Image 1 (tube, rainbow, N blue to C red):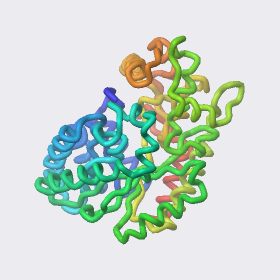
Image 2: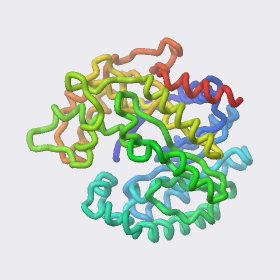
Image 3: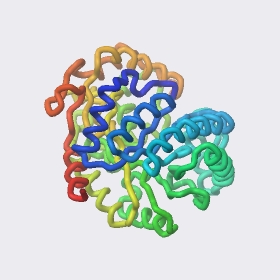
Image 4: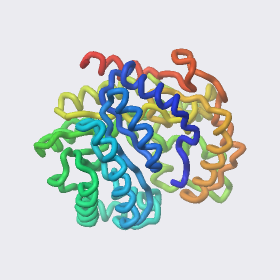
Length: 377
């Protein structure tokens, strides 16, 4: 969306966080996503050197199919260098959720336009998006395998019907929400029945009461928090406006609930395990652009899926605020005052108690994941 989700990327912090992911969370693999290929390479090399398996996931949003193909092929060529150094330890993902995140399959210049287009649900119901999607995936798979000689996958969403024959893994980003709460395990089972190893690329829950109802759309409550600060001529798209009203509020505010997030993540891990998936990546470890605030009116960590709550860093407060204001104008057509957005930064410069050298603190979900994975080691 034209923004930098982590403007301050310290190699020492990367080293520490990956070590914590391996040793304290007891993970044996990490999915590393991003646009900047140099960053992907640096983080992946660090993870591999610490003994983690890496699922190398370049992400380019809202570009044409030709631009996306060129980018993914370039990333695959770079990833091959790491695969040769660590054979059998790196898997390449040639994309994720491209029906939403790439131009040319659905109407709209960016993913918010595509999701809110009047033609969106008609396209999904008729399945006319699947032909163009699979045509692109076929070309991309061929191009990637010419320069990358390891295992390859794609991370889909349930509204996509992918031809999985050319891929080594069935990949799916699958969040549980109110609509599919009872059917979640059965949905996973349909992928397992394809007789290829299934990897869940994303699952998880945000950190407030009612987050389990929205699942993967839980982040939209940030827009609900900002409704009072939207310019007089601005209004949220109806789909988002409806969602931000779903969770309960007390005195007009969302209610932080780390226990709910922990229970949801642990329960979903159990469902995925029972369904027979090969692996699952919790979304996500850290969200520096959604800092915690003691004031629930400005606690943007509630709308994050991360296992740790971040504290804003002085160098990035103004950058994130300006970025959010620009994105609000460009993608939602609403006016957000950067000065107001800075109020979401909370305790600027604070460090964690458990890890005093890092600008975040584990949430209850961190312990839930650590305990669950720890039993499997």
